[in-house]
Length: 83
Image (cartoon, rainbow, N blue to C red; front, side, top):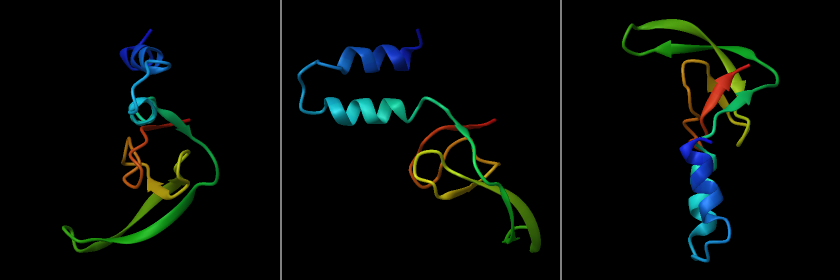
């Protein structure tokens, strides 16, 4: 069993007023698969001063668009992995 799952199991029913928060933060560390519609978005790369095309997918937790270069959602912090 992973350390994150052990932490979740420990805090379920622990009795602290912060159980829900700790469990929610720990669950965000378990990678979820990115599914759903993928789209290509053109954006300006400020450092290179050129327009690049990025492949984007919706976050499985908050459904905001993220690029495939991230292994987490920059909006909600959920860890993600490609299918």
